[in-house]
Image 1 (cartoon, rainbow, N blue to C red):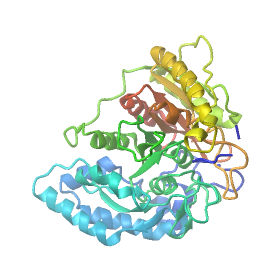
Image 2 (tube, rainbow, N blue to C red; image 1 turned 120 degrees about the horizontal axis):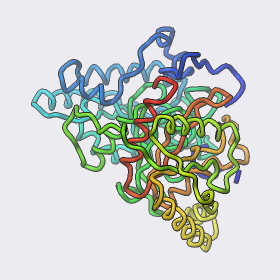
Image 3 (cartoon, one colour; image 1 turned 45 degrees about the horizontal axis):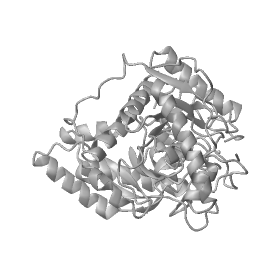
Image 4 (cartoon, rainbow, N blue to C red; image 1 turned 90 degrees about the vertical axis):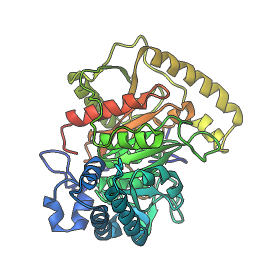
Length: 425
């Protein structure tokens, strides 16, 4: 199907500024707006690196947060990633973190600046704050002046894609994705009801995890939305997951490596119904082939190609914009087919979207949610992993989907993909 009334929705033409020797540490728009020094600046630290440095006394939370606020001041007028910046509160929270560390607390995310999705997102960040994170502001979400819910609207205007200002970052976690991709914060929260974490993660060239529906608290009465996170590094998504689920490990310990583990996977460019651009499908397939070559995944030949029912009618009906009788048939059929798939495979791999990021004049007639919202209906966890750049110079995401409750498999594959990627994160 084509044009989305839901979330997340496109890059061609002008020079992107991508470097020839790999994926830029900071995307072109963020580099140009941060000034000449940004072109030679090192890649921003990961959340794990920041927390380790604060815990070990090599830096202070107040200094880390001050640097983040300065980056936001320099870049966000052009990026539009933040609705509000909580400068005074962030400084106060950072001082509290430093006091807790000085008192001997081993905070797993000590001093990590975090962006929170929307003005009311602080409620969902309480566990992160307890773990030592410092919220620095509310990230942009669709609002007045955004005719499509795929767009963000920040304090300085529309949210732009850090790779190309004339393209949307996708939504509805638009500001969170843009802020992380631009290096303003290492971690930002999101919510995913149809692809709202995975699509902006894909289009901004970062990692976006959607949790199993119902595993973490959500205010969505339809059951379609699940909390998620947007990060530059897969290890940071794992740290978020441990904090949110209470499965904390000793701070500073390394996660179990993915090396030595090979996942049986099925690749589908279209789930049997989507109109996927050949170029987008090719980039995603190349990423899968790199994982195969590295021994991370195996692709046993499927008996028959995966064919799901188009989830659009059922999703729209649950949101009150369609025929309620469309929900049960499509959901039942897809649940059975996915259950059979996960009986024989660990992962389902697809492009995140069937299309590249669109311009600010609208998505046209394509559903950019076509490959994501099926898993909001089924409840499966899913992750967007940077796959490469399309012909237009914009990022393309690879989606990995796992059985219910198997977030660990997704995080392991994302870590491995980072190691095999032909760009630098």
